[in-house]
Length: 179
Image 1 (cartoon, rainbow, N blue to C red):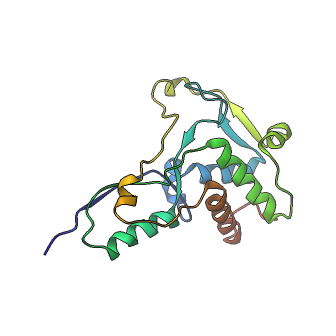
Image 2 (image 1 turned 180 degrees about the vertical axis):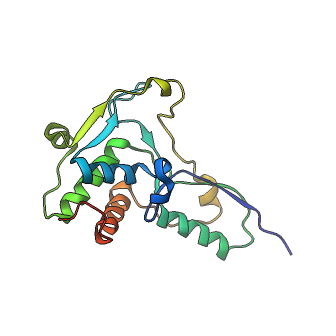
């Protein structure tokens, strides 16, 4: 009998029921709360050569993480160390726009572009914290080649799709930003 040994490096996971994580909850969680309470989302100004809100991370929906984990449960002969991310970095601006537009859709309001959200004050940039200079990762992106080579072939949700679902679930659960 061969024993399965699989290690996972999870990238920026977001999804339902993460309030218990407090400060360590996802960016989508914090952006939703900011928008629900103040009507705006605050992002860092530029850093490390990235423009305001243009720092990039590989954001992955918890539902995609579950699918990856179930794949390994169903394939006990597959072993190795695997990055669990989408393989596609997206900006904090993308997460903010997806969050705000999902709330707007729940309210029956039209989606707005990044420029429109900036102009209306719904997206605001704050000074980059001095204590993070030289310590902040401005770019992360999972190399999913080992995961794909192991046979995992399902697509991953984009930030727009995943954050949209997440925000709708929070609103349906009665968490702020109701129409």
